[in-house]
Structures are given as structure tokens and as C-alpha cells.
Image (cartoon, rainbow, N blue to C red; front, side, top):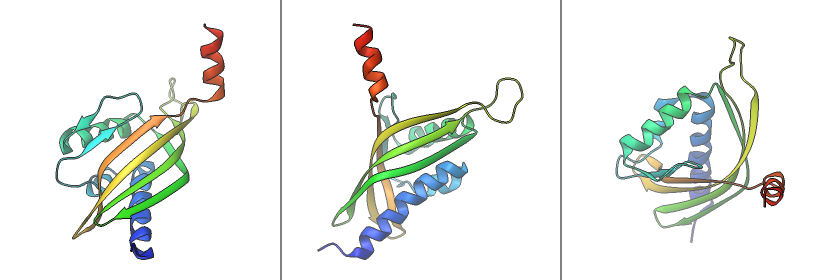
Length: 148
């Protein structure tokens, strides 16, 4: 039987992952990942494997994103032994650098469904894998139908 404490601890680790991204805290983000073989799929990217490749991708994203905020919905946590699965919808609001020296470029919204797999370690729950897939919106479908 899974204890409420396990579910709460996984929820906290999942929240910490997104907060580290929002704050641009690469050290905090790095500490959340396992030291072992890990994997990551960002929306539209190929599968990234290995700690170096995965963490480089986050460093790249953070260096090119001046603002990002995640509003998580539909979050579900399942724990089986020392493995936990979190699924959620990432409602993302982000903005990059302004083109002519302004403070922030235009804000863009995006929906991504994500699966995060955590492993229980002596130091707490750590990410083993993150997979994000873009959600096709109605306007995207309408544009596809219009081009047929």
C-alpha cells in the first residue's frame, strides 16, 4: 500500500522541478536528477540520454528563456515501490529577450502533457525521465484542415 507521505514527497519533488525551471536555478534543477542514466524528451526534440546531454539541454533552454511560468493541471501521481509516475498538463507562459533592447519579448502560451518518472533514493525522490509532448489546440487543427 502506498502511503500518503510517499505521494506528497513525489508531489514536492515534481513541484521543485518546475520551480527550478521558473527560477532559472540550474543547480537546483541538476540536483533533482539521478546521477545514473537518465532521459528527456522536450516537445519537438529527439530523445536525450545521459546526464550530460539532458542537463545541457536545460542549460540551453534556461539561457534562451527570460521568463517561464508553469501552471500544472490534471496532475496524477502513482507510486509503485521505489518508482513514481507523475502525469500532468503544463500550461506554460514564456517570453524571450526583446529584439530592440526592451525588457521582455512577447509572451507565448503553450500546452504540453508531461510524464515525469521519479526513483526513490537515499536523498529523496529524483527524476529518472521527463517526457513532454505538445497538445494540439483547436486552432492548430483548424489551420491543418484549412491547408488540406
